[in-house]
Length: 100
Image (cartoon, rainbow, N blue to C red):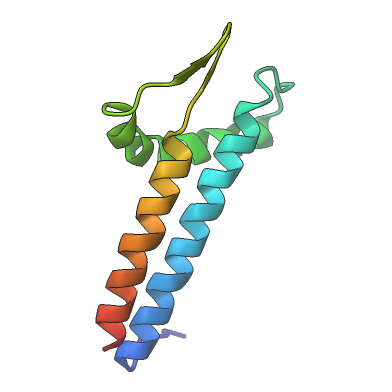
């Protein structure tokens, strides 16, 4: 069975869902970054590699311009926050333009 978008609203709904899934993947990447030593398991390694492969190219765009914030001996990477904010704003504009 092939499902296709019938109206502009359907396409806008698909784009909105894609944005939500991508934001969720960024959130997963942030949560996983707090645990540097996750025990190796083939399934979890494949999942985490997928998350990194999908989110890192987008976040690396912002890492070029936004260095980590130094907090004593640690550093705070603000690129997921900035990237999510830009994604939601630009994505919301595109969805509203497509919706008409």
